[in-house]
Length: 350
Picture 1 (spheres, rainbow, N blue to C red):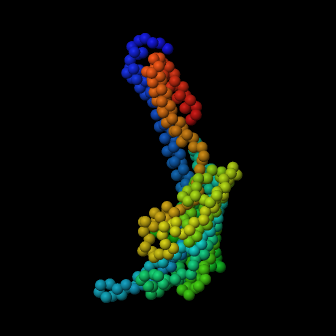
Picture 2: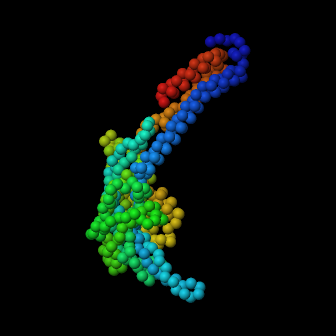
């Protein structure tokens, strides 16, 4: 350390030199940050490509019972016209059990986690009454009742779907159009519906769904019970937290029990009552699990670069205060060595 010369006698000049050194040292870090962002964007593009062929993040919604009916309306001229409307009913109880088989898909340097979910959906519907429906129906088309099941990305359905409805086998088919509440739907005939039925209507659905990273379930039942398990050891739970999840190196199990009021809309309604607010509540009420990577190399690298800038600025600031208060002058080359040392340490971490 030396104590003479113009640099040593001028704090302002020392600050200017330190600023130049900070700029020179941060330039490579800025370039590295650009590379990290470019790699992250390429990875997200790869995930979209994999999801397009395998299946996106999936949400299981429903099942939902849809019953068409007719009622009369009178226009201003006094003429009476028949109007068709749909009555929707959610199940009393809904139990979903599933196993997620994880796998890795990728291209080049990038990989993402995909899964095949083996799901079993059981429950029952209460007997349907139209006593509270206004205006009162003139005719109920019981023979056209449909059971709707929402799957976010129908392309991810792997293999046939087994449906056991009210003691008989039935078949799902693709819906003619997305349901206003469930989104893309599968539909099946709900035979056996009558106005004088007093017993509950049981159902059982078995299906395999392929998706990328996350699986969500919509709590359609007045009481919804969900149990998911997987050998993936790094789950991240979405929405409502499960009750006492078990997480180990061999995988995880998680269980949820939710009451119907958490979904934010009623147990039954008419089709005209479905609006954007209900769809937003459906999205907010859904819960589930994401199969995450615990160590994201790009996130770690970006954090290391940001911390490097902080460490360099903090080190230079402490050294300058040491000079001002201690009367000891530090040469610019020493600042440069310290900055390079921090930068190299950051590069080795990332």
